Image (cartoon, rainbow, N blue to C red; front, side):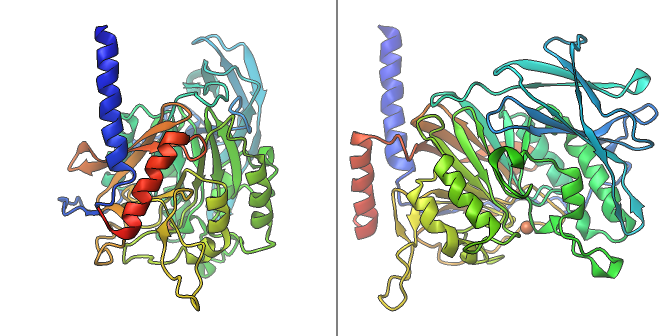
Length: 476
Ligand SMILES: [Fe+2]
């Protein structure tokens, strides 16, 4: 009886939150001004960049999803002195490695910098929801890690994603990463701009990719980071004779693009627990008839909302954002893909690029017609929520100036460093947080409960309609 009373109370509270948060129309521009640490990179001899002990010891270890369904991981690492072994030893209990997988090795040069030996190894056919231990290297240089596979694809599988963008390698980046690691999230959706190594010149570009790889290992070796590329990965440097785009990124970062029939590691999709995640490339061709356009059209057909109700898209450049920095840079992609996003009822679009946090209401501008006068985004219950999390903490600092007044579509915005988490509860509900780095502390600031766009049923549809009308008429 007591339990059911608590359940009822919880339900009532949840109802109030749901009614007031997602579909509310109170826009917030946070007045918080953080006591900003200097946006400088941590020195190379700082402890977070420490080189593991032992000759040729594996470093920069990280994992990402290795297949379409979540039963595989790609394990990547670098050996500095010689190629060494491509083998991963792994198993279900610590110190007992019953299985072996064989990977590949590559290296590259960038100006006069010579990379270490970069290994990528697919470990697949794993069991769902299982802890695995793995070992890289041999003898005194061997290193051991572990990870947990996701639950089987199921519409009600709970799963928590972290969202991090524009991370870099400053003291603020460290604060973001440490706070993220306390969040309990199980995998990272990374929205581009990784190391900011391209801010350096000559051999330091490669050296700063290596230091960044060692920095993020504390999380990325133990849970998958799903990667998308940003402008800082392009590295077009004619003065050094380096003109091949994404050269460092494509050598270092593995993605399971073939599993989703993509022709490029820069755009792909995976299914994980109850989510279907689509990764797009803001800096690869996407206009009509390009490879990415063709691929996305096909991938959207493969989405099965009965199995993976949560449809999430990640990219680098935000489509809706009201910061002065990079304002409307996402318009070109919006004109090509927004129609599809609305038609497919995408739940969330996470982006980075702008070094501040912002969350939108559900709006679309698919009826844009300048001669008819339809120029502005309007509330649209089938539209995604657009979230910009480009506030990881890189050396370029914050984008502190927002467009004033705050546009109708903007729900919350604040220029601070931080990260987000998306806590999927079941097929209908997800809790969403943005956490600010407040001078060393993790402070949850923006919170919303979201209804799934596909499974939002009868009664809830009516409530959306009511709030939608309210927000259109301004009758609040
Ligand atoms: Fe960027």
